[in-house]
Image (cartoon, rainbow over all chains, first blue to last red; front, side, top):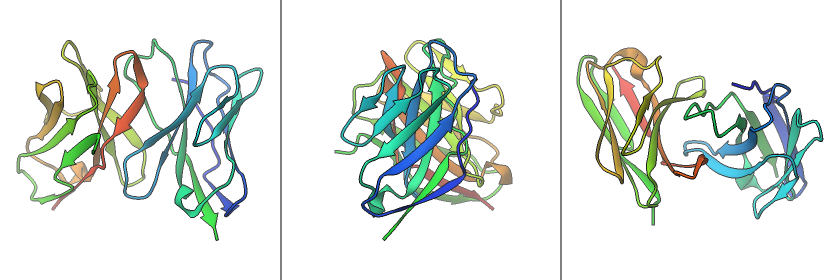
Length: 111
Length: 113
């Protein structure tokens, strides 16, 4: 499994952009980068995923470096409801069902 | 319109008991999973299952067994509960062509006394 490194915690002011980094220097060529989040006392929630190109959806944007060794999840206008633990997960089609979450980044959005 | 539901939400029981946690998904997915989240919040996969294949995380004790009466349900049965089984258990499901985009249930909080 590719290893990831995420800061254990971050703060962000409400209304500002939250930029959550992830290092995945051992990612394989066919592995996507997935981001999930877990709001307190709830199940994990899918946010976004990408392979090489930057991606955007209604929840967030994903910026992947050219060498694919790191990525950044961007929440453009953080709200209090975005307070959660965010997980960066490299995962490829040949990994079977070994879909491991790490320790993630605990994001706190401050009013 | 709950996509993935679990019952019960809370379960408190004594050591040595046998218990089951139920999971149902109405997304039409073929693959379902069970995860365990311990007190340190680290989420680990326990099982993945579709109608053809059961994949077991080798670290899971054989006291844990998934049972699937049909494609929409994957229950988790636990025999001889131990204190260390206390955790939050999440069920999830995914489409067979997109296994990595998983939809999670709300979790079952198990406390073994």
